[in-house]
Length: 391
Image 1 (cartoon, rainbow, N blue to C red):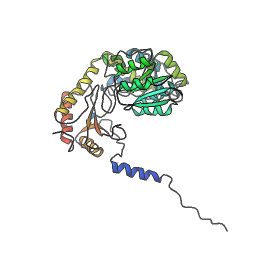
Image 2: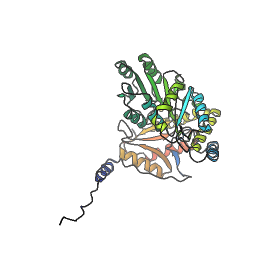
Image 3: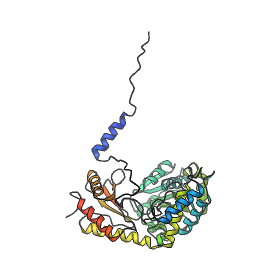
Image 4: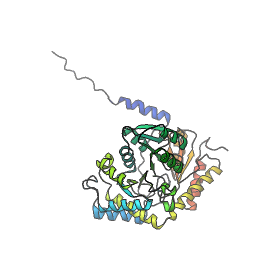
C-alpha cells in the first residue's frame, strides 16, 4: 500500500529570514511609522518645500474637486480617467514652466518610467548620471536601450560618451539630486547634447517651486524650458503639496507618450482630489512667487549654521540640506533621537545613497519661522553622534 503521509510543508520564503537578518546586522531595516493627522513634530523630513500641502487653498482645491468629480478618476486616462480638471492642470503646468505641452500621470515615478521608456528603443543610447533617482534607474532597466552610467555631474564624460555612439541618444539626469541637494550642470549638459544631436531629459522634481523665476524650475532658470530637444519630468507631491507627476516638452513628444507610454496607457488616471490640489497650489505659487526665494533662504541658513558648528553638509543648490553621519547605524540613531526631541528629519542610508555614506536629509520649507529654524539646528547639534562633527 503506498505511503499516505503528507510531506512536511516547505517554507519557500525561508530566504527572506536570511535577508532580514543581514539587514538588521547592517543597520538597514526600514519600518513604517504612521503619523497622526496633527503631528507634534517639527517637520524637516517631508518634501513639502513651500508648505502648501495643508494650505487652505490647496485643501479646498482637493475637496472641491472630489465633490464635483468624485473620489477616483474611474479609469485610465484614455478611457474615462481624463477630466476637464486634468486638461486645465496640464495646460497651466506647461505655461508656468515654459513648455509647449504637458501630460499628467499618477506619480512622479510613473512619469519617469514613461519618459525614459517611451523616448528610447533598441539602438538608442541612454546616458544616465550615477546619482539619478531610482525611478530613472528603473526606467533605464525597463527600456530596451543601451545604458551608459556616467560619473556624477560630469558633462565632459557625457559628451565623450555621446560622441562615441552612432544613432539616437538621450541624456537623462536629475536637475537637483535628492541625496545631497546639488544641482546638475544643465547648461553644459545641454551643450553636449546639442553638439552630439542627443535629447536631454531632466527630472525636475526638486527644482519645481524652488528654482527659476517664481519657482518655474531648474530648466527655466537655465534658459532651457521649451527648447526643441528638451523634455522635463516632475512631481506634484513636493512643492505643490499634492500627488502625481507630469512630463513636459514639445507637443509631439507628449502625443507620442499618450500613444506609447505604458505607465500612462495602462494606469488609472490621477484622482480628481490630487489634480485639484495641485492646480490650486500652482495658482497660489504663481500669485506668491516669493515662496521659492524663501525656501532657498531657509536652506542656506540651515547649512550655514550647521556647518559653522562643525557638522559636514553639502552646500544646497535648492531646498535639500544633507548632513553626513558617521555610519548607517549612527544615522538611524541620530534621526530617532531628533524625533524623540520633537524634530522629524529624513535618514538616508544604503542602498538609497549611491556613495554608501549615510546622511540626515533636511527639508528647507518656505513656511519655517526663525524660531523653528533655531529649534531645528539646536536639536540636530544636541543629538549629533560622536564623529559627526570636526570639532
